[in-house]
Image (cartoon, rainbow, N blue to C red):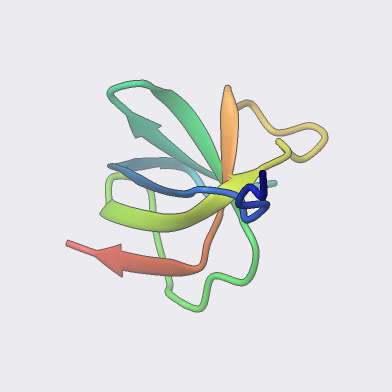
Length: 75
């Protein structure tokens, strides 16, 4: 039986808590590193929604999980 090999698309909404070595978003379910090209200037405290596939947490990043930024919206 064929199965879908595409990674599921995730949605994470929260506040930016770090933009140093990596972009980290504090969400109700933990701290998420946002990977990929982010072309929006962000600062700690900004509220954002990120959509994309699950990703590996970058080395040295203080996050529980990671998401690849396919789209990012600042609120």
